[in-house]
Length: 437
Image (cartoon, rainbow, N blue to C red; front, top):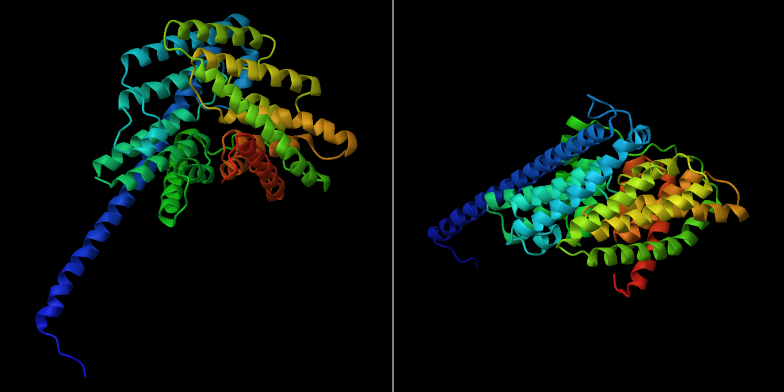
C-alpha cells in the first residue's frame, strides 16, 4: 500500500532544509542588528542636533549660560534679551540661511530627499550634503527661524539607516523600510515621541502597514527616543493640564474639522507657492536677509514670533493669549513663515503648523462659546491643532499620536481629536481633488 523510498531520498532533503533554516536565521539576525543600529544612530543624531540647537540659542540670545538643557524656555530667553542682541542674532540667522544654502547648492553634491531615498534606495543620500543641510536647519532655527527643526534629525536618521543597510547588504525592499524607519526614529528622538515616530514611518514614508514593517518602525523609534533621553531628559514638549470636557465639545470637534481642513489646505498652498519661487542665485541671500530682518523687527514687539512655534502654542495651551493677540500672532506668524520660505530657508512645517492650527482653533473657540459657553480654551486649541496638523501634513494618525505624546493629554480627548482630525483630513483631500484613499 505504501511505496518504500530509498535512503538517499531523505538525505537529499534534510541538508538543504537545514541550510535554508540557517540562512533564514542569519537573515533575521542581520535585519535585527540593522534595526537596532538604526535606532541607536537616529537617537544619537537627534540628541546631538538638539544639544547644538540649545547651545546656540543660549549663546545667541544670552540666557541660561552654562546650562544647555535648562528650565528657561526659548520664548523667555528671547523676551528677556536686549533689542540689539535680538536683532543681531536673527539677522545673523538670515545670513547663515541665505549664504549657507546658496553655497551648498552651488558646490555640494545634489541633495537626495528622504522621500526620494525611500522611493529609490539604490541612490544613497550624500553624507556630506545631507549633514550640512541638517546643520544649517538647526543653526537657523536656533537663531530664530520660524520653521521647524524636525526635518534635520529625520534626514540624519534616514542617512544612518541607508548606511547601515548597505553595510549589511540588505535587499532593496529591506533598505527602503529601514530608511523610512530611520526617518521616523529621528522624529521620535528629537521630540521624545516613539509612537508618533513609528506611525510616521508607516503612514507618511511607507504608506503601508505589515507586521514586519510595523515591528521595525516600533523598535527603531523606541530605541531612538530612549537613546535621546540620555542627553535631553524625559520631559514632555508642552505643558498641558487636561480638563473635563463639556458634552458640546464633541460637536465642536466635528463641525470645526472641515473648517480647519480648509485652513490647512490654504496653508499647504501658501507654503508650497513660497517655496516654488525660491531661486538658487543672488536672490537667495538677499531675500533671506530681508525675510529674517522683517522677523527681527517684528520680534521687538512680538517676541513670540521667532522660533518654530512652540512659544505661541504653549501660550495657547496655557490660556495665556487674549483674543486680539491671537489674531495678530496668527497673521504675523504666517507672514514670517512665508517670508523665510520665499528667501530659501529650509526647515519643517510640523511645529509651525501646530502653532497656526492652535491659534485658528482659539478663534473658532471664541465663536463657538458665544452660543455654547463652557469648556477650557486650551482644550479647543489642543484638539484643533491636532486636526490642522493632520490635514496640513497629511498624517491623521501620526498627528493625533504626536499631540498625545507632546502633551500627555487625557484619553477623553482621543475621540474628539480623532473625529476632528478625520474631518480636517478628508476636507483637505477633497479640496486637493484626491477622492481615493
